Every structure is written in structure tokens, then in C-alpha cells.
Image (cartoon, rainbow, N blue to C red; front, side, top):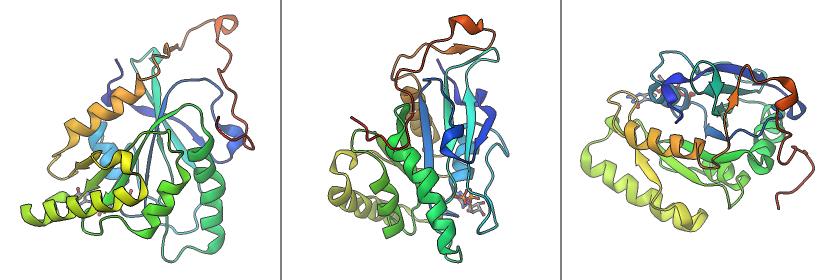
Length: 231
Ligand code: GDP
């Protein structure tokens, strides 16, 4: 059973051809810059600085892979995508995001779920709708409305209703997949980590033992091909 607290840095992917070729399940975290994505990953994994936000607009866009599993095996990966939509980001940076993270979200067969992190005070913005549009309808999504400690109860509930109404329009199948989350109080973290851990074992793909002899490694079930559409 993958336990998120075992997460450790695995690799950085700056171009699609560098994506790992194994078939282990992956759960991606996406969100607009400053939404609280890094803080959410760190709370779920119980680590202070596993993921960290880039403060530099235009910095190289990359996917960061964190391996989950006991020390001698990997059961799956958490994938941190670059924060989306710096107001100051040049158009080129946005294009880079679409070309790497966008295409990753739309074409990766190993992707078993996506956590969309959104600041509860902004609810879902057009940028979040754009993020959602990259994700195939078959990929399960949970929306983590973070910084929920910043709103009193009644406003939190109102935000929840507004987000559900917006999801009715964007992805009706996930209207009830919204978690009120706070990295500060850790509220919602058990629910969210339960969902992420279930996705990491959802395919019942056997984990990869790190000392597995090379000859016994499985071929990827469906090799990644950047041009291919998902079936
Ligand atoms: P990222 O750019 O999406 O990775 O955002 P960060 O995780 O770096 O968070 C952006 C800012 O929001 C930081 O100053 C965090 O300390 C703050 N923050 C993130 N999550 C929470 C939360 O749940 N509650 C509060 N009060 N602040 C948060």
C-alpha cells in the first residue's frame, strides 16, 4: 500500500521524451501559481520542502516526479506540474506549459488521477477551466480547495456550492469530488491523501522492486507517444 509519507524526489522531466517508460501509476498535482499546490503536496507527504514553488516567472518548466513506496520499491509517482498562469509570465512560458504539462495531462496512459489545487477565495477561475480542459474525461479529478482556513464557515460552504455549480458546467462527473483543504490546519488532508493513495493502487499494477534484474522488467503496457490520442 503506497503511503504518501514515503515520497522522495525521483526525477525532473523537462521534455516529453524524458518521461519514465515504466507503467507505474501517476497522480499529478496541478494548479495556478500561488494556489497552494506545493504546500498541499508537502502536507500530504508530511515533508517540509519536498515540493517548492518557483518564484521566478519564465523559469524552465518541468515536471517533478516523487516516488512513493517502501525504500526498496516504487509503487507509483506523485507528479508536480509547474504552477500555471503567472500574470507576468511571457506568452512563451504559457506555450511551454501547454507543450509539456498540458500534453502530459492529455496523453499519459499512466495518469490515474489529478489533484486540481485552487485557492478557495478565488474558487475556480478561467485558468482552472483551462487546466481542466487538458485532462481527458476518463481521468479522475479531485478539486482541493485550499487555504480554507482563511474563510469563516459560512463563506467556505458558499465557495463549495459555487465550485460545484461551476463543475456542473465543466466536469459534472466530479461535482462531488471537492475537498476543503488547509495546509495550515491540515484539515481535509486525510480525505485527500486517501483519494491519492487509492489512485496510486487503482490499476493494481505491481510495484517496481528497485533491485529487479533488468531481464525481468516488464515492457511498458502502452508506450508514451506524444502525437497519439488516448483511446
Ligand atoms: P504554489 O505556487 O501553488 O506552489 O503555492 P505555495 O504552496 O507556495 O503557497 C503560496 C502561498 O500561500 C504561500 O505563502 C503559502 O504559505 C500560502 N498557503 C498555501 N497553502 C495555504 C493554506 O492552506 N492556508 C494558508 N493560510 N496559507 C497557505
